[in-house]
Every structure is written in structure tokens, then in C-alpha cells.
Amino acid sequence: THFGFQNVTEAERREKIYQVFENVAEKYDVMNDSMSLGIHRVWKDILVHKMNPSPGTLLVDVAGGTGDIAFRFLNYVRSVRERQLQQKLRNHQNLSWQEISKSYQEEKSNPLGDSQVVVCDINKEMLKAGMQKAQHLGYSEGLSWVLGNAEELPFDDDKFDVYTIAFGIRNVTRIDLALQEAYRVLKPGGRFLCLEFSHVSNPLLSRLYDLYSFQVIPVLGEVIAGDWKSYQYLVESIRRFPPQEELKAMIEDAGFLKVDYQNLNSGIVAIHSGFKL
Ligand code: SAM
Picture (tube, rainbow, N blue to C red):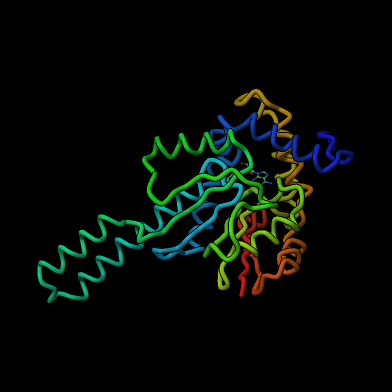
């Protein structure tokens, strides 16, 4: 490849990837929007809808970067809790005003219903950008940031209800180790969800997509972030990533059951899901 990833050791590859995200951290969100024409937002919304977390869910978002999945998760559980309260009030028209006021107060004092999300990323600069964004957008409750490697997570066994990794797994040096770690930190019954670029089956769309990826994205990278190479790496890493069925088999090898995937936009991205049962 142009980026020269074929002949490097794992440690060198890890170092290069670290540099890529260190370089892009500040411009990461702007670049995401411009490269995907904003569509990455829709893909992330679909991931969180698929997760359908209930209040009380403990989520770890690995390679969580600037917090996009975490913020969506918090919004989602907050709205579920609000809806539950409204339903409760509608279904119990005979509630006394004391009971109604108690329900409201409970909801107000704990709008997330004890849900929590831990954003874990290997890159300090990405986490820093995420924490600044959280502060700016007013997220603090139920949210924490942890520096850590997906291949060696700094968490106990059987801890989380859900594990997500969005546009992260293709950057991990040893995908098999990352999947084993995902399995380890999930509670029995927990769910693994991975949103990642994948392979387009339609030949025409695939050609257009190649053209866009190789001709347009590095140029955008240069113009917006002054960084051609990092964006060339991103494109190449997408092409080298295992296709849908292969990733599914890898997830199964890590021990997950009921593994399947959903293609979005003809396979430009796919969401893989599995359970620790
Ligand atoms: N999940 C975020 C999103 O969807 O916007 C960020 C995705 S970004 C393309 C990839 C992230 O993976 C970067 O923040 C990078 O630092 C992180 N990353 C790469 N290798 C990692 C590893 N071994 N462990 C944890 N995070 C890693």
C-alpha cells in the first residue's frame, strides 16, 4: 500500500496508527462530517437504536474517540426514561398528586436511571477532544473516560451489559485479542456491537466508492486538516479490513453466539452483533 503497512511490525503499526489519530484528533469531527457527508451520524444513530438500551445499562464504548456513541447512548436512555414516566402517569390516572410529584422528582434526580457509559480509547488526544466536546455539549452524568487498549482492556471480567466499537476495530493491531477482551468484559447475556466500514457487493457502487475514497478523501484530508497521509491510511485500512462473513467468523471464534450482521448502504458499513451467552 502507499502507506507502507505491509512490511512493518505490529509495534510499528500501532505507533503509526497512534500518530494518525494524534494528528487528526482536533479536526476529527469536522473531517468525519465532510468525508461522509454527515452520513456517519445516521450510521451511529442506527447502532444505538439497534442496541436499544434500557435505563440502568452499563456500556463500554471501546475506541470511543470523541464520544459520539456515548452521547447518543445517554440521549437514548434519557428519552426512554422520560417516555416510561409519561406512560406510567398515563396508565395511572388515579395516582395522587403526591405520587405524581414523587415520580417526577425521581426522574429529575436520576434522568439516566443509573445508566453509565465508559469511553475507552488508546489515544490521549482523541480522549481530550472528546472530554472538551462533552463539556461543551453539557454531558457529565453517567459518563467517564478511560485510557486503554482494546487488546488489553483495563476492566474486570463480566462487568458490562453492552460493548460497542464504532469505526475502531479496523485500527486495532490484533483483532482476535480485541474480540477476546470484548467477550471477557461483558456480563453473561451481554451484547457485542461493532459498527465498521465493510465491503460493497454492488460492482457499480463499489467502483464509485473506490473513486471517491482514493481520489477525494485524501484531498479533503489535505485541504481541511493539512494531512494527506493520515486520510490515505484511513482509506487503505478500510480496504484491508476483513469482509462481513470473515469478521462474523472471527467474532464467533471469540466465543460469541447468535452472531449476525446488518449491511448499511449496500455494505459501505456493517453492524455486527453477538451475545455472550
Ligand atoms: N468511535 C469513534 C467514532 O465512531 O467516531 C472514533 C473512531 S476513530 C476512526 C478510531 C479510534 O480508535 C481512534 O480514537 C483511535 O485512537 C482508537 N484506537 C485505535 N487503536 C486502538 C486500540 N488498540 N485500543 C483502543 N482504541 C484504539
